[in-house]
Length: 181
Image (cartoon, one colour):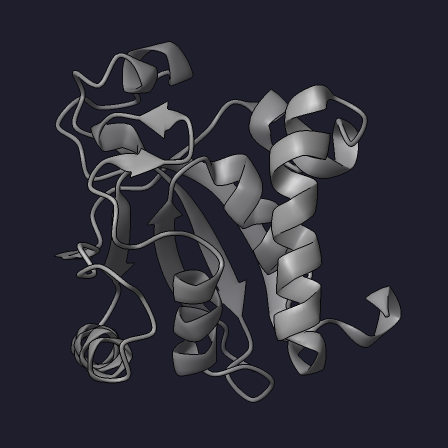
């Protein structure tokens, strides 16, 4: 079985990591940085907004269990792809909505998904998600990995991540790993 990769930036990587870790067919989710000019950026550097990197998650997934299109749908419906460089209270280019594609097929599927969501008027405003070729992925510091699982009782996790997970579960029950139901 050859695993595929997907890389999404949907604001804070703690939120997107928590959601995609629960998706059936996803074998690994790693928080990190992509899309900037500085090699080996630190969290503090990325947060400054000066490196050009976005907070992203890199997903390894089994295409026989979950399609890239389904991952895209989950991505788009679990964050706000209509706000430029912002997710909730997090602002700056590091929180932009972006799909870093790993193949021409992923690029085409992303363009098609945005077109379909726009035609269906799923969102009140225009989708501003960037579509960019994948570049070097820098793994975030270890304390960012599995953040929600390791810090579930922190106020940010309870106030921001938990409601997103509840929304995800209610909208994508069939996509959740069976052992989590």
